[in-house]
Amino acid sequence: VSRAAREGTLLVLDFDGVICDSADEGFVSSWIAYYHLYRHENPTAIPIRQRAEYGRLRPFTRSGPDFPLVQEIIHTGVDVRDQAEFDAAASRAGVEKMRLFGELYYQARTDLLARDREFWLSINRLYPHVREAFGMIPPAAPVQILSTKKPQFIHEILAGAGIRFPASRVHHAPSHAKLPSVEALRAAGGFTRAVFIDDQIDFLRKNGNPKITAYLASWGYVDPAWLREDSGVPVMYPDALVTLVRELFLSG
Ligand SMILES: [Mg+2]
Image 1 (cartoon, rainbow, N blue to C red):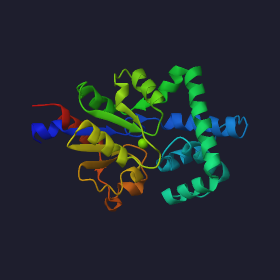
Image 2 (cartoon, helix red, strand yellow):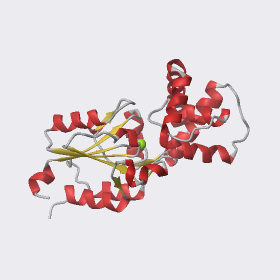
Image 3 (cartoon, helix red, strand yellow):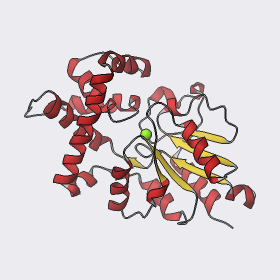
Image 4 (tube, helix red, strand yellow):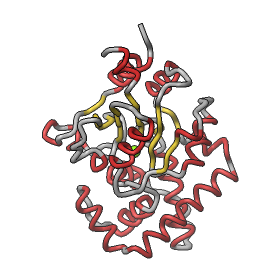
């Protein structure tokens, strides 16, 4: 990689499942949203099966409203085995219910953060190899975050983890597509190319832009089928991320 090419590369990272292991927080917030705020119930115990099922379904979520939907799928026992079946469940729920789910999810999260900030931060952990990579990235390096999560929560988690990351480099993505946003960020910054890493394979598929290289994060919330070669999306592994950051941003 020549120095010019190195300087011309923008690194765009998803947040949940790429930078932050937030699966426990997503489970807690969506559980409160669905049972307390939506069903107005107060279950006294959570079966461990519920957490395991949430882990299995987590790869199919794209944005906030999908998380209470996961709780509803588990609660009602609907059989959901792949992305198409998950998307069909979202369609059946309908626009109004999904909008309500989104509101209640963010309400649960906001309440939790206000009530017990330390606990909330403790269930939003940075992946160790990402923390290592962030430790190597010079402050001025072109790294941006593109997430469907509201930026205010990303700022809270990064600050809580002691990482200084400018607010201007955290971008809110629409829930249906990310590649157009990556291209917009690349073009706006005048970069010759962009590397984009996400753990939701639908955000990476059908990348026909030769200026964008898109990778699936192996360490994120991925359906095992997505890691197979025939998924059509190259996979990024933890060691390769550290190497990539070194190649892109550390000269010499
Ligand atoms: Mg993600």
